[in-house]
Every structure is written in structure tokens, then in C-alpha cells.
Image (cartoon, rainbow, N blue to C red; front, side, top):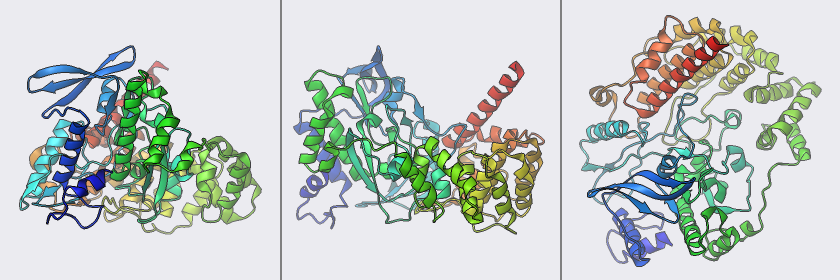
Amino acid sequence: MVDNGVRSMGVGNPRQKESLAEWVFDWKTEYYRKEIRKAGGDIWFGIIGCGAYVENNRVKGIVVATPEGKGIVLAHTVIDSTGSADMAIAAGAAYRYTDGNSVAVQGAGFPFKNPNDFYNNTDWTFTNDTDLLDVWRTMVVAKDKFEEQYDIGKIPQTRERRRMIGDFTVSVLDVYNGRTYPDTISVHLSSFDTHGFTEDPFFALKPPAHSGADVLAYMPFRALLPKHLEGIVVTGLGASANRDAMPVLRMQPCLQNQGFAVGKAAAMAAANRQNIRYIDIKQLQKELIKIGNMPEHVLTDVDNYPPPFAKVQEAAKTVVDNLKGLEIVLWDREKGVRALTDNFYLTENKKDKLVYARILGMIGISDGWKELMKAIDSFDDWDEGWNFRGMGQFGRSLSYLDSLIIAAGRTKKTEVLPSLFRLMKKLTPESEFSHFRAVAIALETIGNKKAAKPLFELIQMPGVRGHAIQDIETAKKVEPKSKTDTSTRNNSLHELILGRALYRCGDYNGVGNQILNEYSKDLRGHYYRHANGVLEMGIKQKKLKLEL
């Protein structure tokens, strides 16, 4: 509907694009303006939503800053399409984002703009949209980076933002098992364009397919409803989903459909004077099916989770064949661990036993630690690793040996440390980022002080230190002209992740703490959030030990 409407505006115009998949951006803006006005809506320009008006856990409006001053806009239902769940979070919704546990985030950029451009996709940085200092840094560096271009864009090109915690959270395994729901509100189809590294144990074992292999995912209405809040619904990147599942859920055509569906839902809630959480979802689905937004089967779909134990047991047998059925056996963890453990002890095939040991280790079960250590010891040197890649990143972000090392670390067995130390001595400044990341994850998970000095020695290698950016001149100086630069992020991720692991293993000469403190003053918001989060977690743990 939207794409056809935009296209119909330019019949015979020389600016018209050849395919429906392309559009003239100012025509699309005008299409939305016309449709909103036709429906009786008002459009306010120069307005910033800066808060929420909430009574008894019901959102009754939003706080806005306008050229005339601040005010409150009352609403029966607030649709938060900020992309960062800003209004829901302001209303008190819990959310997930980069923190002391994770620095993984999809690559971002800031585009250049030339007359009549349609598509300038960039990926050269990480940007936290909610951090004005970081957004300023991104804009200033972009203006310098693209100084020979006609202009630059207006907002950062971020692919991952704050995700509120809803009544339901869509996981990677929900997507890969084709989970269906009785309250599906939108259907999403995309190849798994990760723009960076993944963290889910499933992907550490079985990476997503390469470009062109589309994945179909269903989004339940519950995943758009912030937990414990009424009167508000969240769309797009702010929805409740695992960050590794979001690449399939974030594509623009699918979100156009989702936005339309949510608008219909809000209209139904207002007409019936009810909370949007309790609308007649089947009636909404019928209307969406009628216009082609969703397939007919969503009307009769039920939740197909959990998988029957017999199906999990069968999958536990087939995983030895190139991890076939891994998504099933990991989907219901309790059943999966039972089935995997049974097969691990029953099989006499050494190769099969290692497959089970690697899967169990990756999810924190220690039974196969000896098999993992033997497998690591069979490597004389590192295999082919992975350096940070943003644009065009499909498939693996770890090597096979990397996954063995992480799995061994997650068994928390100190006996595997000598095997890891041996391989660490073979790392060089030219070694791939994934190898450094693997040993860092393994060692910080075990958390033994014996790992501190080996980690310190890695950090002393040429080129590892000195990549924090604390002022704008440095930010401009170190950023190459490329619109898809990875070197700057590779350097900082090496240093930050190794420093984090060193700090968590008891530190050595205070270097881990020093690195984290340097990044806690970084202009780049995600590094700042991660470094501060790690330090805060460390302080809490020390206080807890003292209290005990």
C-alpha cells in the first residue's frame, strides 16, 4: 500500500525509480504527510518527546518539548515508534541494551547525501542514539569523513537500539524453529544480516546462513506490549526481542506492515474504549489478511512451543550430522540437556562424543570438558578466524577452534587453562579478532587469577593499547574515509574485550582497570556503557564478598 502509493505520485516523472523496491525519499515523506492529513491527523514539526504521563501504570500521554515550551499530549493509546522504545522506557518499562554483560551491537553509520540519491548505506561506527554526545561525535566525524560529498544525512543509521521488555520476548530459537502464535501481528522475512558478531550459543555452534537464505519469523502482539504498562504499544527496533534475532525483524517493508497493524489495533482500542492489550486480535488479523498483510493460517495458528520430548530426543541423535536439528534440541533447554547428556554418555563414537561435549559446554554444562580439552590440544596452531565486519556480514563470526575454546571456558573447569595458555602464546598482533574474543570469553568465564598474567601479556603486544577516543579531534583523526570502515572498531574491540577479561580475572598491574576507565570516558556511547557496566559489576561483587 505504502510503496504503491509513493510510486503513483511520480508517474511520468524523470525521478521515478525503476522498481517498487526503490523510492524517491521526499515523495515518501510527502505520501505519509498526505495520508495523515487525509485521515484527520495533525503533524507537529520541531517537537521532541521527552517524557511520559503515567497514572497507576497506565500511559495517558507523552511529555513534549516544543518551540513554545513543554507540555503534555494526552492520548487513549500511545504508539511508540521512536525506534528506541523511548516513550515506553520513560514510562518505566524495563529494557535491554549494551551494558556490563555485552558490547555486541550491530554496526551503524552516518550517510552522505548527493542530489537525487536513493540509497547510501553506511556502516563505519557504533552509535548510541540516546547519547547526544555520541550522536554529536558521529555527525562531526561524518562531516569530516564525507567532506567531498554534497551533504550528509540528518540522523544516525543505527540498526540496533534499546529494546523494551514486553509480555513476550522473541528469541533466536523461536525464529529458527518457525514459532507460531495465536496473536501474530506481523510477518517478517529477511536474510540474517548481522552487521557484526553474534552472541547466542546457537550461533556460536551453528552460524546463520549466508546472504540470500531468507528466514521467516512471526511477531506476536505480546512482544510489542511493555510488561506492566497499559495504554502503550512499541513498534520496530524497540520491540521485545533478543538482539541476535533482531536482524530478521528489523527490515523496512515488514515494519511498514507492522506499523499499519498497530495503528489499526490502537484505533480498535479507542473505538471500544479498552486497553490495547485486550483488543480482539482475531478481528484485527482478519482485517490484515483481507488486505494481504498476513497469510490466512495466522487465524488458526497456536503456539507450537514447547517441542515434544520425542522430537527433542530425535534431534539429539541427528545433531552429530552437521548439527542437524540443533535449533530443536536447544529450544527447550531442560529437555535438550537431558537428551544431549544421555547421548553423550551412551555413544562410543569419539567424533559424536565431541559434538555433544561442544554443545553442552556452550550452554554451561561441564560433562564433556575432557573431550573439549583433547580437541583443543589437537590443534598445533590457530585456524582461520574472523575480524570484525559490519556491512555484508553473514554467516560465522567465530572459527571452529574459537567455539571449542568458548565451550571449554563455559564448563568453568580450571583444568583446561594450560590448553588455552598454550594457544594464547601463538597469537600475534595480526591474529584475527575472533581468537582474542574467544580466549577472553573463556578465561573471564572461568575467572581464575592464573589467567591474569597471560591476558596482560596479550595486551602488551604492539598495537593492542591506546584506542579509546576521549575527544573529538582524536575521533576525526583515527577515522578513515571509508563508508564501511572496520579497522577502528576492530582495534577498540580487541583492547576493550581483553581489558574486561583481565579485570575479571583479578587484573595484573592494574591494566584491566586502567583500560576500562579509559573507555568509560570514551565519546562512543556503547563502549562507554560497556566499560562503566563492567566496572560497576566489579564494585558490586567486591562489596558482596566483603559483606559475606
